[in-house]
Image (cartoon, rainbow, N blue to C red):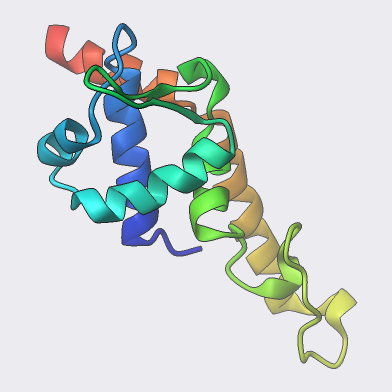
Length: 143
């Protein structure tokens, strides 16, 4: 797994929105505050809206807000949506499996280790939500 700039920007923008639950936030404001180019953010938001993670409203008071509660959006879901499978090699992917070139995939020791890596990454990202990270940020400011 390699978190792309696109994936990083998606997560940062979503975390920003998780901290602003009371209002629709204009895309330009999100871009300025998070230092993300607006055109790039527009492309990312198309995918996030399509998945129901974001809601957008047009007009003079338009903007974006989360489409679901922050506790219902895991980092794993976002990373998979934006960057694809979490597996470091395709032969251990649950969503984009491709056979490897090993002579005996079932007993391949490299595959076994890469499966452990995939499972660890998946476990951490799937159990961590936007709400978890928002709570951690608040805890640091007040603690």
